[in-house]
Each structure stands twice: as structure tokens, then as C-alpha cells.
Amino acid sequence: MSENQPLSGRLADRVKLREEHVITRMADIAEKLTDVIRLGRGDPDLDTPAHIVKAGQDALGRGETHYGHPLGLPALRQAIAENIRAHGGAEYAPDEIVVTPGGQHAMFVIALALLNPGDEIIVPCPGYNPYSQAAELSSAEVVPVRMSMDTNFTLTAAMIEAHITPRSKVLVLINPNNPTGTVTPPDEVERIAQLAIKHDLIVISDEIYARLVYGNQRIQPVAALPGMRERTITLSGFSKAYAMTGWRVGYFAGPKALITAMAEINHAFAISTASVSQHAALAALTGPQDCVEEMRLIYDERRKALCEGLDRIGIPYAEPQGAFYVYANVSVVGIPASLFCERLLAEGRVMIYPGRIYGDYTDDFVRMSLTQPVERIREAMSRIQTVVHAIRSE
Ligand code: PLP
Image (cartoon, rainbow, N blue to C red):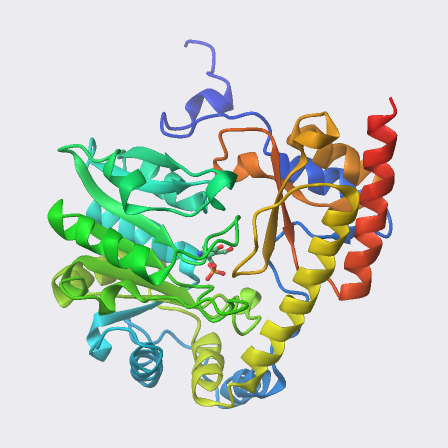
């Protein structure tokens, strides 16, 4: 009998063994420290509003502990359809909506349903990386559109058009974008939609941060534009606007012709989304909405405090127009951003993430989440200033 192959060699070819995952490495460093200010993950520190928690508890009390409808609780899908419409989105029937265990899960379902090996999927870069992972798992080719801080990381139709080939099939839009916090202006979204029609692209429109925009920004739902409903899958969820990350509820909506196959894949993966969480999500949509505005105002205040801190230190950043992130260029510090993140954690006990994990092609940027109270953000900024000063005087 031949000698046994090492276990790692038995992994499937599609599993690329990359360098140790930076988030895991930073989590290991943080584990050994106390009083770390965590501005890393996109997970709000704010609690899920009490009426939503209560709806979940009530559902548990009623024994809602079984599998549910494969597409999702009918009342929730109805409420999602109404909510999409109320915010200027397209008209959907409840059977054109699939509730999933988080928006992230939906990305993989959608990619597997749309992409053949060799198909090209255009993604914003930097952008939310799981779209690329989902595409790779589908053996599709990921085509990144590189945006730059000179234009505040705004995605334009012209930039996308330069990347279109006969194999282009799917275009991912994330508005507002993560990690940059950039909002694509409505007139640019319209131009991108026209481009999608011209080149027969299917658009995945991730609008999970659409309720969290600042100043006079506005999000144009892609599917509501002329000719777009039939070629758009809108993806969203409850994690961000309602501080419900741990409940794991998201959804996608699109034309029946695409949704039926996607629903089947979702069923194969998940059977259904946790019933308790779906009842909580229903309360989120049908209950008072002031909680969303209250949270938005809190993030807005934090955003200003963080930007003031960066201005003081002299670190440039993209104008954060939406979501709850600030994307800053730390090349002025004089070391690569990924090394800066590790040193900042070890020496300053502040956790932030390098832009590289969002596909950034430079190692100049960091993402800072607005997921700590304003006084902790101010404290983080003074710790950052100290570490930057120490590095610069080496
Ligand atoms: N879309 C974007 C752009 C995100 O940033 C995230 C999470 O950070 C998600 C989707 C997935 O969120 P969830 O799976 O919690 O619904």
C-alpha cells in the first residue's frame, strides 16, 4: 500500500491554500490583548431593537422551531415586497423573493445559478470580496474594475465598459459599497443600467446598506430602472439597517424565470431560513422604523469623529457617503497597510482591516468600521496617532 497522502493534499483543487488568513491572524493577536478597540468587522455594536428581539422571543414561545416555507415565511416575503416598493424599488410578487440565512449565503446561491465555467463576472475593486469567492467556486472568471481614490472610488459606466468582453455575463454593483463607503450617484446607476442592457448583462445589485447613507446621498434601486427588472437580482438583508447580523436573515429578489432555479439551490443548501429569525425580520419591516434613523444618526456622528481624527493625523480617506466604514490611505505612514494593521493592533490595541482583503490591488488602504461608540472612536484615533508617530520616527 502506498504511503498516505498528507491530509491537506486531499482537499479539492478549487480550494486554494492562500497565505494564512489575515483576519484569523489578527484575531489571534487580539486574543492575547486586553482593551482592544475593535473597528474591524462590519458588525454593529448596537443592539437589535427591543421590539424585534421580542418578536423573535414570541416566535420561540409559540414553538416556531421548525422548517419553514422554502422561499421564506409568506408574510415576510409580502413585507419585503412592500418595503422594496416603498423605497422606490421594483414591483415583486412574493414568489419572486427568496429569504436566505444572510445576504452572504445568497451571493453563493446566485453565482451558482448564473455562472458557467469561463463566464466572466465583473466586480468592483475594492469591493465585498465574497462575490469573487462565489464566482471562483462557480469556476467563473472574476474581472475586477479598479476604482481609485482620485474619484472617491466611484464606479462608472465608462470604467465598466472597458472591461466588457463577449464572455461578460454578470455585473456586481454594491451601493453603497463596502469597504469604501462610496455611493454610486443615481445618474451613474442609470448609465450603468443602459450599459447592462446594451451588453445583455445580468446585474446583481447589492443594496444591503441602502438605508445607511449620509448628507444628501440617495440610492437608486437598479431593478426599478426601465428594462432592468428582468435582468436584475436585488440582494439585501437585515444585518446592517436593523443591527441583526447574528440573526442571519437576508434575501434576494428577481424575475421568476431566474428565481425558481435559485430557490431550488437555496433549498438544497439551507432547506429554509431559521423561523425565529424570520419572525424577527418581519417585525423589523412592519414595526416602527425610527430605530433605523436613530442608528443612521449614530453612525453619522461616529463618521464625523473618525474623519476629524484622520484629518488631525494627516491620513487621507475617501469621503464616506454610506454604509458604516471609512476607507483611508495609510501610505503616508511609510509601511504597507497590512503591516500597519498588525502593528496598530499589537502596539496600539486598535483593530482595523487592510484593504487587501477587499481585493484592493494596492497595499495602501485600511478599512475602519464605525462599530464603536464615539468616545471609543476618539480614543482609537489618539492611539492611531501615537503608533503612526512611533513608526514615522523609526
Ligand atoms: N453585502 C455586503 C456589501 C456586505 O458588506 C455584507 C456583510 O458585510 C453582506 C452583503 C452580507 O451580510 P449578511 O450575510 O449578514 O446579510
